[in-house]
Image (cartoon, rainbow, N blue to C red; front, side, top):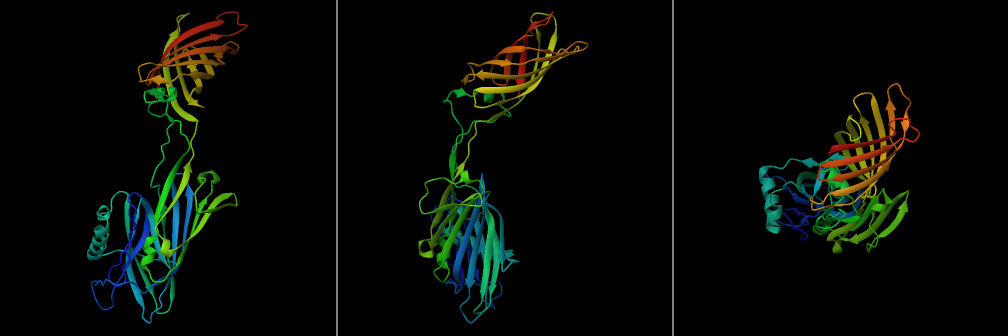
Length: 387
C-alpha cells in the first residue's frame, strides 16, 4: 500500500498506511481557538518534530512498538492539537503526552472529517475493520515549549511465511492422520515481514531523523541478510538499529524468523479389543507424540478389566498416509510392564503393527515375557480411536 501523508485543517497530518501492513502514525489536526465545534483549516502545522525514536520489542508472532515524538512549538502562541492514530494489524494502542494519557474521544464530525481524508487517499481505510484501529488523541504545546508525544501498541506481521512441512499434495504425516483434531504439523523455519509507515513525519515542520531499534530477546528471531541494519548482541538479545532521515521516510520493513519444529504433539488414544490367543477383553488408553514426523513415541496403559494392567512405552516408525485411502503403516517396539494381582510383575518385549486411517487404527501387539512359566507369549488386536 502507498504511504499516506496529508494535511487536515490548521494542523492536520494524515496518517500514512500500508495495505496489509502493520502501519502506525499520527494524523493530527489543529482546533482553531474560538471556533466551537472544531473548524478545520487546511494548512501545515507549525509544530515541529525534532526527533523520533521508534522501538520494536519482538517475539514469535508479533512486536510491541513505541514511537516517541519530541515536539517543539516554535511560535508565539499556544497550540492545541487534536488528532487520530490509525493502525492496521495493530492493537492495544495507547497515547501519552508528557506522561499523561493523551487519548481523546472524537466527535462524530471529527471522525467523519478524518475518515473522509483517509478515504480519499485509500478507500480501504474509510471504515476501520477487524484489522484496523482508530484512536483519537490530543496534544497541547505552549509557545516556545517542547512536548513528548508517545504512541504504543502491538503490531502483527504484514506477510506470513508458510510453515507446514509438506509431504506432497496427497500425502499426510502419520500422526496428523491419527490425530486430526488435536495433532500439530511439522513446521519449517519461515520469515514474517513487518511494515510500519514512517512517511507521515514529513507532514510535521522540521526535518528530524528517526532512530529505529528492533530488539529480539530470542536471538534466532532476527532474519539474517537484511540490508541497512547494524546488528549486535546486547545482553543476550539480538538488537538491530538504523537511522532514517525524515526526507527518506517511507515504509519501514524488517523480517523475523518464525522458528519451525519437528516435535509434533499428537493427542490421546482410546482402544478396545481382546487377545487372539486367549479369551480376554482388553482396553487401552494413551498419548502419542512424534519427533521427527515418522518416529512416533507413545505411552499406553492397557487393562484386562480383571486384575491385569500393562504399562507400555513404545517407539514406532510409520509411513505417511496417501490420499486418506492408503493407510499409514507403523512398526514399533516397546517394553510392556505387566502388573498382575497376586503375582510378580512381568517385564517383556513388545513388537507392534499399527494400520492407521483418519482417526481410526487397527493395532496388533505381540508381547513376549522371557522366563514366564505360563502365558509367556500374548497376542492381541485393538480397534483404536485417536483424537
